Image 1 (tube, rainbow, N blue to C red):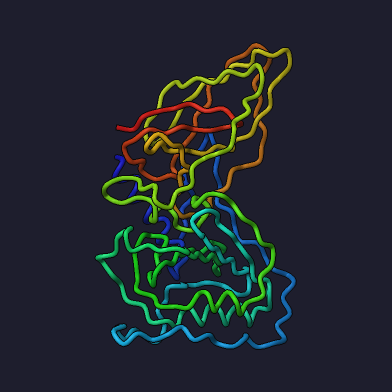
Image 2 (cartoon, one colour):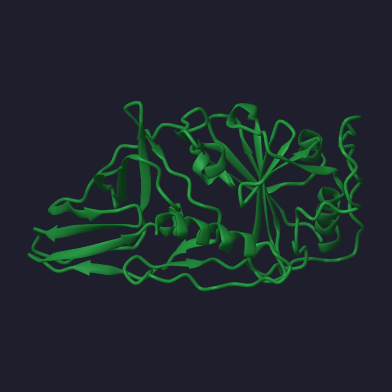
Length: 316
């Protein structure tokens, strides 16, 4: 059951980048609803100028000769999506956006498609060096393509790894970036789950410890009812004289060597619905959190954090 669930999750992410753009709506989300977030239309494009210069990506002598297009960008769409670029320096993830013209963004797609790429099977987490880069772009069917890159390796959203020699530093310097945003967690880097876990378990090498202080609401008690690697059920009790309102947002942390770390999700367009929930004064409500966006959890100690409260649970 658990293995089947992970395979289904990976299959869904594979279909997102397939040319057929097949999509099956996730089920079992009646308690903590998460919906795919579609790429937003970009109405500010003015297709009047050609793409900026092509950058020198380098051509190692030992790189196998690929097809004319490596197809790693799949059906990426310059027309309907901005290009988001991520940089992880070991402490923060910085994201930047290219909002320039459709031809310019198409030039980025063509550039990345032209880089020689060959599948590798002996890649390990030890091959990762800083900085780690990430990219994200919408497709013709509204879903996103995501990739991580480090030390000459391109990691896809299905966990496949390709040799991909590209000068991202020069690329960054040659682009006009807008809307910078930084987050102190690798969990926000595309495909971070494949950079932080392997067959031996979670690896904290690139993870950033959770340092925020939780400030739980007064008069609200939270208790664990049950947990599996598919869902967590909690009870919320409102001891106040007035209703307590909250949303569906939550996250998972994992405990490694006595330190809590944010847990990366599986690749996907995950987004919580924005409706409000309520616990009446003096009442106790049962709440179920579906964990499908985290895939199959590895054995370990976890905590579900919601509204500055948390419950701890174990996965064997």
